Length: 174
Image (cartoon, rainbow, N blue to C red; front, side):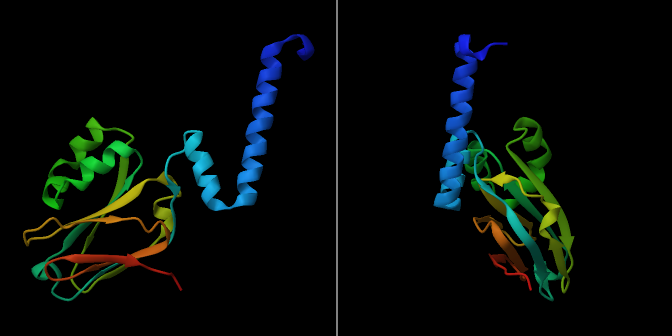
């Protein structure tokens, strides 16, 4: 095929050359530019790069009862608003329906932690998808939202379960 006579071939070649040039320039400019470029071409969010997740339940956590913990990866913008309005009891009661109603907008992993237990998870349990944010839901007996938004997407996080609530903080694995 003679590409010299076909304008579509030249347009594709020009587009590919421009895209590669833009990617190269972004790589030279730093990671923030790469994320912006990826957002422009349809890759939303930031690459999740957790090395470790630690979930630690204090003695007497959740009134001395096991705590269900869900870590939810938000993949689409519309899911942020939906999930940020849900208290943990509603999340746990409706998560299966939410996944069916909004497929591909988020994914989650679940654990049940007993008082005094420390669970160390490799970041590989989540892979390295592009995420917009992360929510942690904990199923406590005490009333409350028991939902926390996490924007820490590098290194790792530590979830500390206490008697009536929990905290999430950055964690740097050893």
